[in-house]
Length: 222
Length: 237
Image (cartoon, rainbow over all chains, first blue to last red; front, side):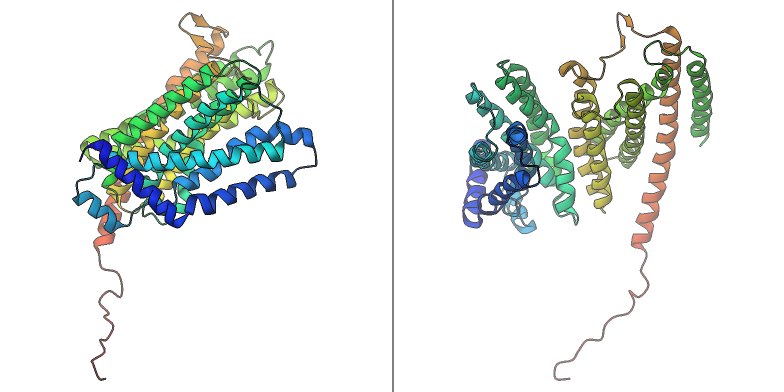
């Protein structure tokens, strides 16, 4: 079986499990929506302030709840399943790629639901070139999936995993979050997104190379 | 052992000389007395970059060779890096408070990215602590060290990428934008702090080696009570 075929099988498997458990879209997504509802309640009733912080809240909620999509229990494998995949000769890099692809798709769905909700609740100023925000959101989804899957493998079977993994992902995803927020601001001020988008592409490429290169040694930890 | 003491001695002499320059230089026309802190802030920041860069190098070398000394070097370097990053943040905040009138500015890319780098390596140390098996610990932390090292160039070039409160590099190939006394004190301390880093690295690596040897021995030794076997119930009893 080719690398692409193996990755595709893992991708489909992860989505099928998600379809059965609904861990990302039926649990994490509503929790993210609840967080968006809670933030305005914790702030003074100031419509102008809410409209200013709206885009930032979108990125913060995407990061904080998106990482839980990448750590979802259903994306992991039990030692027995893992052993079986290894004996079947599944390339660890293909496994990583397939899992990243599935998490990316789920993160995109998460962003697609969160974006209109943020607009509804925070009523940010209309952004004329808003379609340019789509590549930024896509890059954040890919980057977060790459980091989350890597950290998920890194902390697999550790006792403090549920606390340790978010502690690792949050600061590692700053190189994605900062340019994404700046890119959105550039779109608003009509300055173009080339520089922040290029920076994000570089970060995503570096993460992808590290993820694929370290898949084999990480396979040996589980 | 002798190497460690020699390095400590050289670092102490170097720092004494560097600090004497820092205290002798005239107060800065704009920044006043607070400019003296540069002789500590810049070396500690440099050591944070060096320590985290070397953590990645030692970690990757461990992945290639599986020599436990390299893992100890990576761990020791990360611990020292966290210490110096904390010092760089504290000295930066003291300097910022005196010069900018504010100790912490969230809009400043250098401050925010340095704080994030600090958290990445706190996570690195937490990951090591959470992994009991030595080989697993070395493997996991080597990979995290490589990913975390991506933050180093980001922090360094953050002042060029995002024009914010923190000034860009003061020492460039075309010259330095600071008085000669400040430059001398900064460069002498840069060398002295690097020697201090090496001394701490040698010291901590030795400690980690001893710790691992001790743990390996004690984990093989029988625990009190292991000889006690619960009675087996016979069928029908």
